Image 1: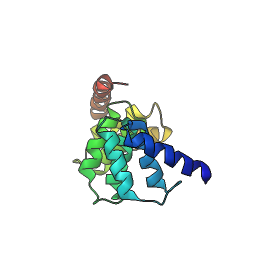
Image 2: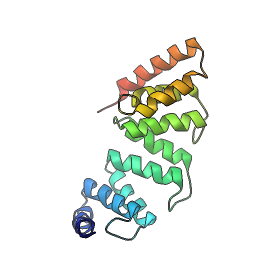
Image 3: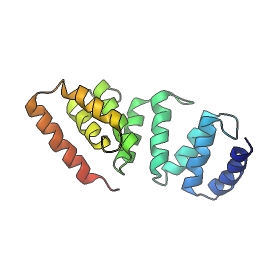
Length: 161
C-alpha cells in the first residue's frame, strides 16, 4: 500500500544516516515484503546494522532470521546469542524463544532448568510462557524447580530494562 511505500522511503533516508530505529524498521519492511519486495538478504543487512548499535528489537528479529534460516544458513547458536542479547534487555519474546531453544536443545544443550527460568521471566509478558513453564516443570523434580526459580531470579537481576 501507499503508506508502506512512503514509510519505506523515509526509513531508507533515516537508515542511511545511521538511525538504528529506521534500520530495524527497514529490516522489518524487507522481512515482511510490505512497501517493498520481500528480500531476506536486505532484511538481514538492515537488522545487522541496527544490531551493531544494540537495538533490542533488531537483535530479536535477526535471531529469528538465523533460527528460521531466512536468507542465511540456519544457525541456532547465532539465534541463541542474539536472543540472549535481547533477553538481557528485557525483551519478552526473546526470553520466550530462549526457553524454547533450551527446552528443545537448539543451539544450546537441552537444559530444562534454563528453559524453566527463561519461561518464568517471559511469563510476565506472555501467557504461552506460563504454559510452557508448566510443561517443562513436568520434567523437573521439586528440588530442580527450586533451582530453576533461583536461576530465574539471578537472570532477572542481570536484566537492564
